[in-house]
Image (cartoon, rainbow, N blue to C red; front, side):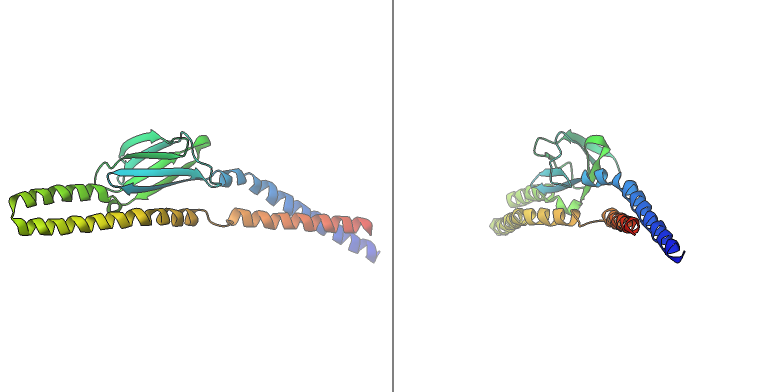
Length: 206
């Protein structure tokens, strides 16, 4: 009698583990495709041009994705589509922060905020015009000072162009994180399911 009670208890626990595992698995498996197709976009400015790269979490490029550019107040400035390499570029619209949104297939969406201080091209060109006017109006001393300032800007732009690929790589690494809550809970459900199967077959043998 006691043996039957124990066997019944083991069988009940095995079924409980199995049911819990199956429920967790089916509930969470529906969210895996969304994670697998998560979309990222990264943007950077070079001179008077803003460049963007759009890609899925697995590294696949977003082809013919709709890219929309807004200011930080939500006003749409322009839009376009990515090429076969997931790239899209446009002229800097002004010295203002930009929110760049990419819309890929099946409603997947990603966005990136480019701050105003990252748009150095417009400020540099405007400053260059002001310096040219100053050099014309003033003597050789201001001209020499303007040459030093121009050299400094060339050096800064060169450093920015060298550091920008490193910044892009770091941003991608931050975006592509390790396993999230969905994957962790899904793994726990898988373990419960395996335990339930083991207990079930063990009770059948007895």
